[in-house]
Image (cartoon, rainbow, N blue to C red):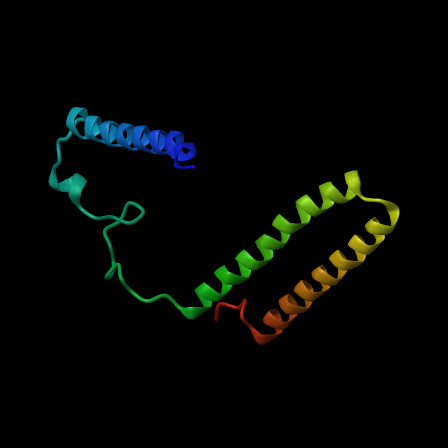
Length: 123
């Protein structure tokens, strides 16, 4: 039974060794001429204005989470649409269309709720 996993172990070992060898070769053979200009921290071509560990506003994270949620909606819609058109019978298509309509309606209601609460505003 364990003999079935030997090819996987060999593959992981070879890939790990190759990764370490490639990193080592890049470190040893790559040009390295550091100077104070190259080693100085910068942000968009300018010197850092403040501490880089400053706190972000919570609204930034809220907008990011909302973006991820509504972006995942599209990730669910594409496979659903492809499978629905190719393999489904007429009855299944109607049921799937109704269930996707409910799914989208819930997401739209959530979006309207967040909009009304002012979560998308940057005052």
